[in-house]
Length: 216
Ligand code: B1M
Image (cartoon, rainbow, N blue to C red; front, top):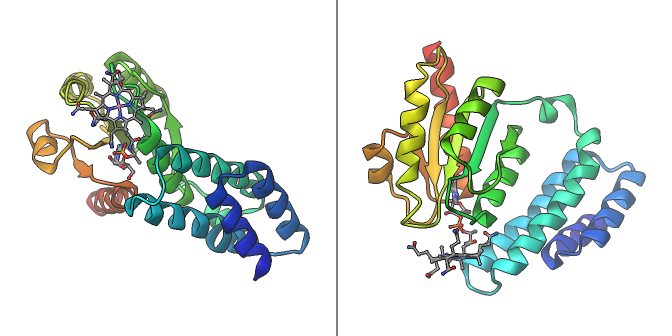
């Protein structure tokens, strides 16, 4: 359908204004919010991901497209069906102390949100105390940490130790990611999981929470 292609193209271009306009247009034509999400916004973002992987576009374009998708999502959210909107779980996520990189984490957030998870993004340069404070306040199912620097990834261990020290009744699952992170590092610091990209992060959360429910 032409209007859905238009939405996808506007996301790819990173044109937030046109994304909003075309989403409004599609809604006024009684297209379902799920259709607009899956065949418009997500299609556009998938294409951005592929182009980034093939070095056809670079970080700034990815970031701008992500913002455009978010602008469309904000308009769609109230129209999404209860099933799609119902939270599948709470996730508190942050870029660890000393680290200012957040482009990848934002993409991870967006993908998780799109799958129905409720995200609290603590931002960048987040100290362990903040993680612990938010866990106590929000009782998330999952805590996610992102680090892009070899000098800041070691702080993840400190955060995990600070969380363990609290001896929480329901300790959230802890997942980590970022370019220098590996599965063996996750095993070493006793994280519950590692994901190399946003799609794997979604799979990881799904699996961890499925297992959690099976155990309960
Ligand atoms: Co920085 N930087 N940077 N930088 N930067 C890197 C990371 C670097 C590899 C560049 C290089 O030297 N080749 C290098 C790190 C070297 C190292 O430690 N091994 C580096 C450096 C050294 C620095 C500074 C120290 C530079 C300086 O000032 N001398 C400085 C540090 C600042 C700080 O953090 N304290 C710095 C600063 C910056 C900018 C601020 C300019 C900017 C960040 C802007 C921002 O994020 N808002 C920046 C950028 C953009 C980069 C590069 C070019 C791109 C990072 C990126 O966004 N990638 C990067 C080089 C590179 O990677 N080519 C580099 C795209 C993004 C989609 O991928 O972040 O990997 P990524 O996220 C992926 C996965 O990792 C995963 O999913 C994402 C989506 O697929 N993932 C998770 C990420 N988090 C996850 C969490 C999960 C699961 C998966 O679960 C919770």
